[in-house]
Structures are given as structure tokens and as C-alpha cells.
Amino acid sequence: SGIEVFDLGVDTSAEQFVSTAVENHCGVIACSSLLTTTMEEMREVVKLVHERGLQDQIKVMVGGAPISQSFCDEIGADYYAEDAGAAAREAKKVPSEDGTFFLCILLYGTCPYLPAYSTSISKKFRQVS
Image (cartoon, rainbow, N blue to C red; front, top):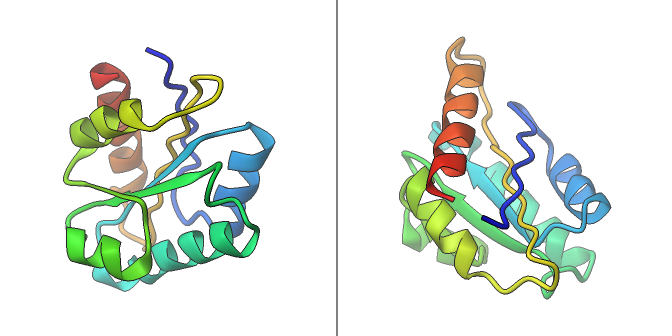
């Protein structure tokens, strides 16, 4: 499928997302959030990609229950995906020099089901891709 998934799990910092993407020559960072209180961390991921001048090499995709296209536009993310299936289909459209793509799940909070949700998104992404 040409898509490699790196699931960084929950409570992942913007620095971890960008560093992992750079180290693994990834073309896409996909961030998901379940809670409105965690949405701002997505803004930090986009900001860090731009601060490091990586916006031509790394595209940022956002999605999750509280996320919308207007929020994606507001924070300057490159793509919005309504669900994991849409994210996989969208990622396959993103140009990449070597065909490698990067999906990490960005979840913040202390709810006990978040790690299971993260794993579920990764599995869905792999199935669609």
C-alpha cells in the first residue's frame, strides 16, 4: 500500500511528532483528538512543522470527533479527515518522494479507553490502506 504507520500512542508532544517524522523521512503526520481540550496541541504540531521549515516535506492531517474543516483551516493544517478511513484515502493522495507515509495518533487526556482508541485507529488505517 505504500503506507507505513507509526503509532506514537497517547499524550504525544508536538516535538515527538515532528522529530519522529524527520527521523523516519515521513511525508504525513496525522493527528486525532477526542476532546476539545486537546485540540490546541494540533496547532502546536502545525506551528512546529512551519518553524522548522518542513512544510514542503511534511503535511499535517487532523481529525477526530471535535475537529472540523474550519478548525483545520484555522490552524493551518494541510488536510482534514472525518475518520480513519478518510485519513488513509487522503494520505494515499499526498505526493511523497519515496512512497512512505506516517500516521501517528495524537490523543490527550486521562480517559482509560484512549490507548484502545489509538490502537483501533491504527488498525482501521492499515485496513483501508
